[in-house]
Image 1: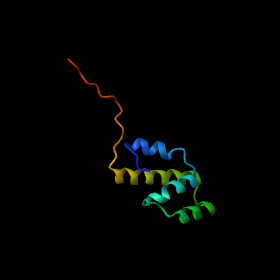
Image 2: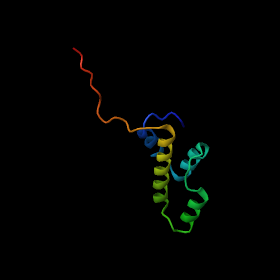
Image 3: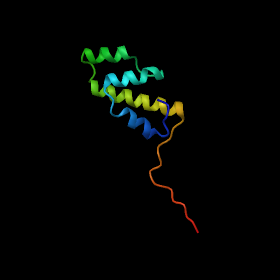
Image 4: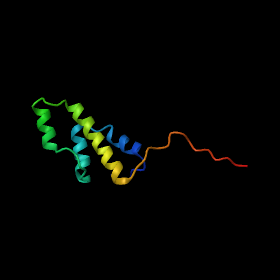
Length: 84
């Protein structure tokens, strides 16, 4: 996915993803993330909570995509144009 305009767009895209959907979506993007097999092993042996791992992975993906596409946060207030 490369149609991101704001960081908010990346967050909206990542938010609904499950663990497997996340990996399916980001693998083609070649992001600099933790190794999937390492994450799988940590979850499988009980060293890490799957939800916590996913939160961290999504944060890393957001950061990586933000840097790659030079994104900023969506302006929070509408800009008003004064017309005379």
